[in-house]
Image (cartoon, rainbow, N blue to C red; front, side):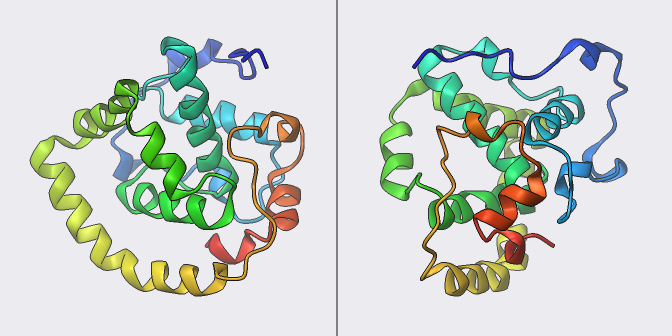
Amino acid sequence: MTFVFNIIDTNGIDNIIHRPMSLRTRPQYTSKNSTQTLRQGLEEYYTVNFDLTHPSTQPEDFAKILLAHDASHVIYGCDTDMYDELKILPLTFWTSDFKFRDWLRERQNPSVDVMYEDLIKRHGMIGLYSSIFLELLRLMPELISMWRKTRNHQIFVPFLNFEPMLDRSLLEIRQEFDLLPFIK
């Protein structure tokens, strides 16, 4: 399959005023009942997170994973604050066809460091690890609840092959894959 990066429009990105994460409103795609399409949600994701590495700037093998990760943020209604960054990985393992073993394999790709460099750029090294520790404490009860709810999960979100869902509403996708219980 040829991977295409022009699934979203990034033209207006240069006109956005940067606001710290804590001062901006949550994106519409994070709303549990959002009727945006996945494509619209991705456009919004890249608009509000213009400081993150865009997949189009990366080698194709990593770009596909990065784009799938970004689409997961939209599908699962997760923002890019530390709480949601820590939540999305296990939620992806438990409810998609991308499992922990896949993550370990992809972690070998040096390009994956780009995602971690973005986190360090946003938070600083000390801020990043302090934030991870504090947010994990806050997230732990939700992680336990999510794990219990997903133990018998039967329908898995296609992680790398999400393109057929681009023009479907997020609500419809979330209903089909039984994701609404995991979105606040």
